[in-house]
Image (cartoon, rainbow, N blue to C red; front, side, top):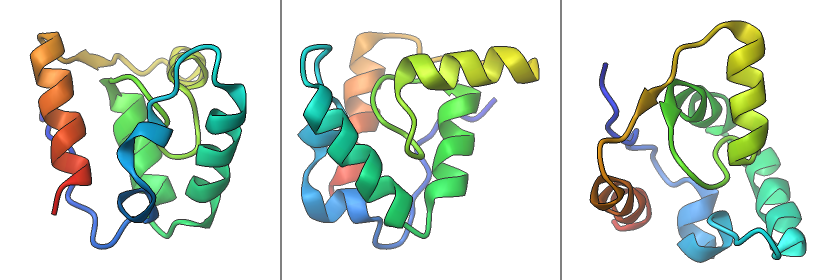
Length: 98
């Protein structure tokens, strides 16, 4: 399975800044704000699809890590895990760097 981050053209998250989309557990307001940005983005559907297929942290397609895990489980989606934390940070940087 391909776990590469999709290369969306002009996603709204790139304009805002990456940290907002990777909130800590105690940053509920940031998570709510990030999700509101996703809801306005034209790439929300394929972004969510990626977040459902790949077990990656953060807000993807307007859904949190836990929300996507529940969705994937309910749909019977077997999720691909990124191999290392270094892979995760590489993926995170790729999506937000032009």
